[in-house]
Image (cartoon, rainbow, N blue to C red; front, side):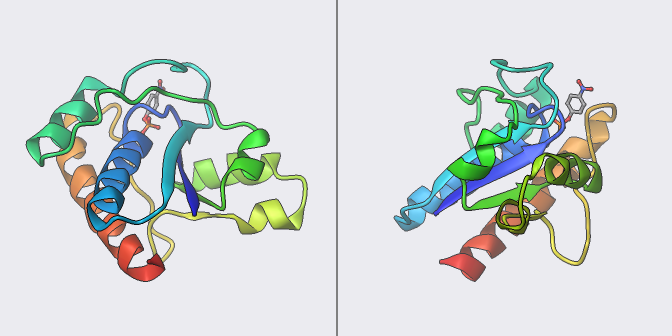
Length: 145
Ligand code: 4NP
């Protein structure tokens, strides 16, 4: 199973989801492939935001080697599930889909129509965002393994 995590810049939220889920998947020996991408192209090739690297490290995850990628139409063919952090991401990703099969791969990362808040302009959000992301990644494994 191939899973793509998506946010706006691919430097704060989706790299956390990528790194945490990959770590948990590897620990369980699951044959899942995890990646992340941004709907925006500003940060292509960059390491995650230092605040995301730091909060991940605090909780025992190393995301520092990950590099930002851009979500493109080709991503639909490369992944089975595309999980987006907020409703703007959802609109942007669905806007690139060309058929129903592609649209059906896309859903919000969180359940119950909830969004992962963008922490980019608020340092205090990185810790709660991390906890929400980690909890959902654990739940995803229970749901999908
Ligand atoms: P992310 O956060 O979507 O969680 O990676 C952001 C990162 C960069 C920007 C906005 C949000 N930006 O405007 O550059």
